[in-house]
Amino acid sequence: MRLLVSSDVIADILNLFSMIDMKPPISRAKMMSVTKSAIKAIKLYKHVVQIVEKFIKKCKPELKVPGLYVVDSIVRQSRHQFGVDKDVFGPRFLKNFTDTFQNLYRCPEDDKSKIVRVLNLWQKNGVFDMDIIQPLLDMSSGSFVPAPALEGKERKKK
Image (cartoon, rainbow, N blue to C red):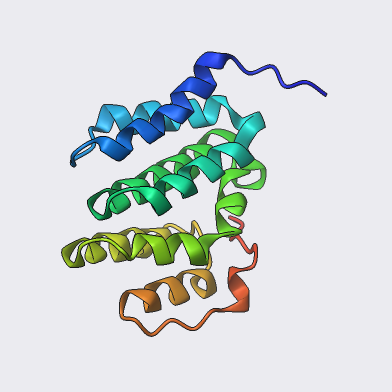
C-alpha cells in the first residue's frame, strides 16, 4: 500500500527540527503550523509522533517545554477534529510517555512548573486518566515509580 501524502506535509513536519536551533519563545504561528502539518499527515502518525519525541529528546533544555506544547496541541486538535475514539496521536504518544517525560524534565528548573500545569490541565479536561498522569507528576518531584497504567491506556469520554 502506498501512502499519498504530499512532500509539503512531510517537509512541514520535519520543519519541527528547525526549532532545535531556535531561541525560545517559539511563536504561536510556528506551533500551529507544526500541529496543522501533523493533522494533515494523520496516515503517518507514527512517524509524526517519533519526530516529536526525537525533538524533545535532542533539543536544548529551554526548548523542552515548547516540545510538550507541541504534543499537547497535536493531541487536543486530533481529539477535537476526529473525536476521542478516532484519535490516533494520544495513544501513540502514550507508548513512550515515561521516556518522553524523563526527557522533558531535563528542562530548566523554573520550567518544570509549566510541565506540571499541562499535566494538571490534561487531568482536568480528561485527556488522560489520573493513573497515567500521577506517575508523570511524581517525576517532577523526583519520586517516580513506573506505573503499569502507562502502558497504552487512554481515557475515553462518555
